[in-house]
Length: 339
Image (cartoon, rainbow, N blue to C red; front, side, top):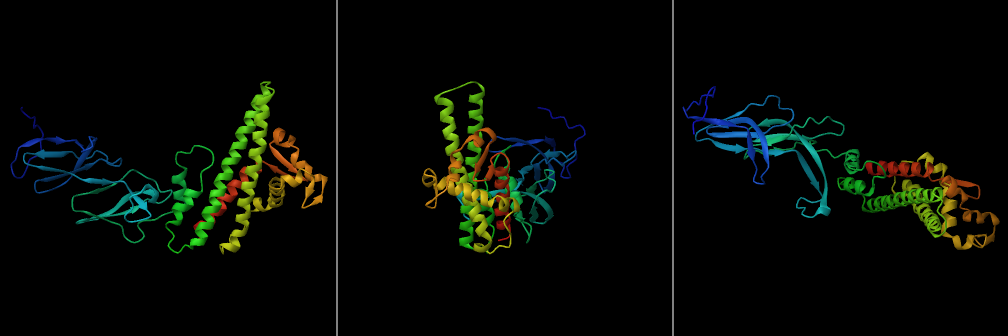
């Protein structure tokens, strides 16, 4: 076959030009576009094209060339162990970008949160060492939170995985403090799930009522709603209790968020009523007769206004509770970030 060499580059050794290398195929069968990176004798180095490569130079192939495809590094993975083999030890990945190249070394760093990512990657020739100087690898709590949030279009973003990942980077962490924070985060995530369940049940009940359904179906949904609300409030108040004790137990200067403090007593009262519902059924509070405690069984506000009303206290499940969840999430994250 005759090869068109019109406009072909000249080889100092006088070898025949065989063509331009535009793509290479990996052992996995993936075909990628490549560009010319350089030569060492008859070794022709090609690398993958990055988004920032405008009009990338083509790689001229001469008879007898050894084509060497460079290794591309787009990110680094963080693990709990240098010899991590299990998925449970994997933390997260961070984009890396090149800083400079020296003979045998390519220096790189991680991309900072909020820093524009133009797609530039690290490219290594065989024998090159990828080097990260001190401070080049940076783990950021908010970046880890962003990473956890990826793929969740709306709704609650679990806090426990975020804190577990972040605390793996804190060398001076107190083991007891870590256990406390993770326990609080687990409770918070579960409380958020239960609150979301009450929303779904209330919407379901409203739909059943609006379409004129009567009898067992809406009644069944109603009692599911009441039960889910009781469990959700108990779970949430227990998280508030842990948050309230955090400044003392974790030796942190961060005070309980104001919205949580404002609803603290209402939550305590409602939670206490739900947990001691056997006493409330007989109109008692701590063995004292008090007819006002019977309001815990009036579910009109719950069904009509998505709100719990008890002995003059109210707790709005549509506005106040989601705000409390958000405030508590930010509060525990702040504490973790300063450990």
